[in-house]
Image (cartoon, rainbow, N blue to C red):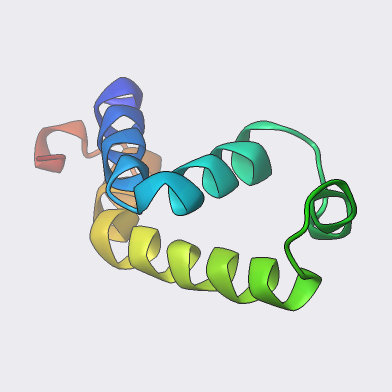
Length: 79
């Protein structure tokens, strides 16, 4: 069940385009902070913050229910 949700999230982040896909991968898969990402790129901290915030909202809207089902052990409800 976890792998199903994980694969769906990865597929969704790939829909964010090159910038969004790379940014979400760096932010969620590493321990880089928003400030560290900003300091190592030419992207402003504000832009990174607002992008990550928007991507989190999209992912939560799309997969929040599946994640709740996973946490509750209702694996058969995960689509």
